[in-house]
Length: 219
Ligand SMILES: *[C@@H]1O[C@H](CO)[C@@H](O)[C@H](O)[C@H]1NC(C)=O
Ligand SMILES: *[C@@H]1O[C@H](CO)[C@@H](O)[C@H](O)[C@H]1NC(C)=O
Image (cartoon, rainbow, N blue to C red; front, side, top):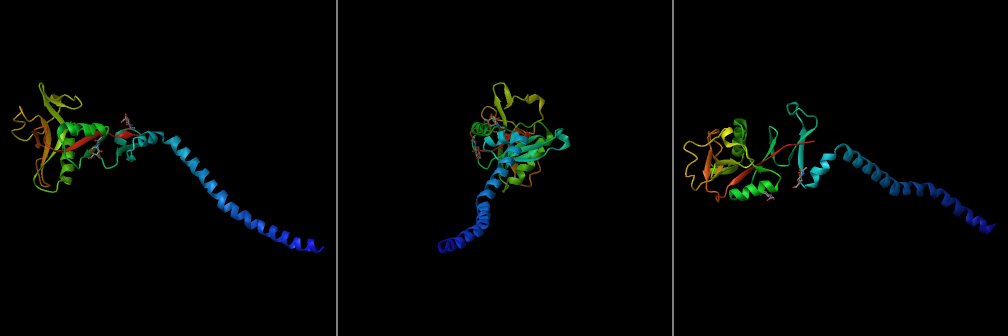
């Protein structure tokens, strides 16, 4: 009896502590597991409905997406790599560093883009204003575009026929064609008024900034 009497309170105490134990077990083990399950489900759901993101993310590029406008005639998202600027179905990158024309072309290609091919007055205006945002002085700042001279004349990097596109050369340019075979937009500071006449040809080894272009990604 005595021994039973000693045991009983102990047993009762254990029984009383059991609900508490359960709550702690629940909190410590079950809740995190539930949270993990919910997370896995959400990830699976998102993965299912936004498949293309996965492909985009595989390229270790961060993408910035906005809902497609009605002008783009698609439902979904219009995406540019983070830090690129969007204009009429394309994304544009203004480099922070300078290099030769062929290195510039390679750098753009390496980022899944190309040196910019300017095909409209609107695009020229957009790019000129974009450069003006960046320039900090009134010296001539040069940005390579995807236009270079070969034996058979000027050629865009994507084979867009040069004859069919509007050009925005400075008056008197291009000149010295025997030596200066690469085209760049020249901008003289934030106040430069020459929106439609600022292309010049330079030696292709000149170290210039560059503009890369790629089509927006539609998701
Ligand atoms: C990812 O990069 C590869 C190779 O650079 C390219 O072929 C592919 O189109 C890219 N995918 C996307 C979604 O940009
Ligand atoms: C291209 O240039 C940018 C800016 O300097 C740099 O971040 C990037 O790594 C370069 N990419 C390639 C493929 O050269």
